[in-house]
Length: 397
Image (cartoon, rainbow, N blue to C red):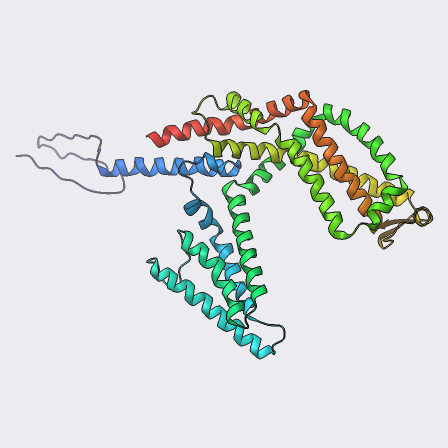
């Protein structure tokens, strides 16, 4: 007679045999559904680890099946919800009384929440839920519903149009920042900024001294002070934007070729990149170089703020007929007054913008710098490319 007993437990139990009966003890592996479930969950966890790694490196498009609906808009949903609720203020009018505005704000909030709750019900979700799948219907509601409040409460067409345009701009910014991991790119490149500056010391030592000579000549030029001190604020901003755009064009001009070379050097282990992934890699390179240019520009601008506070006093500014004499900061050094004025900040900012453009052109035309920068970046990104190859192999499994 054979007796079989089975005990299901979370621990391995000791087996004992009782004599004098003839007994036999056997053990063996179990290959049932539990082991398959454990293998599957372990695989999913490992894939999630690789995807988090890509996001931290500023390369979210290395994630397969990365979509705006599930990976971009859902991450921005809490921000959109906060802005959506705050836009109930679009229902108020400053010409109304406090009680009228309070009633309008509460009415606007009720309209917004009620309309979005009905949309949730239509999409098969609970009334008060925050959408986990943000599609065209939710995006359209985010733009249209807040813009409708100024029309409902007072027929404010200008306010309605401004609200709709502002929400569209917010959607575009959220899409660009989250889809391409801009914050992660800035953090990743910023952590390596000074290492890259040290690696490019040769081009800095060649470009900056000549740049400082030209900048000094400009700085002590009367016309430079008159132009920047008398320029309207809006025009000053436009000039700064013009310099930034020109520098960005110079930096971006070489990126397509350099991305291909980087892919050949660091990404040979895996399949070729798709065009959106190449754009993501190019954005990492662009931000890395742009941060270097920004640091050089800010350093030169700060130098001229200090130099101008010491060298260009009130008598000199009066002789140069400089406007905007408002003093921002006043210091006493060795018994003498050193002043940081609005005009000094304007001139120093203009020279910093010029310095950034000059440095962008210098790094574009310096083959040694570009090779050193590419080699440094290839070494840094080789791990990400190798992780992508492993990630794709895991997905096949």
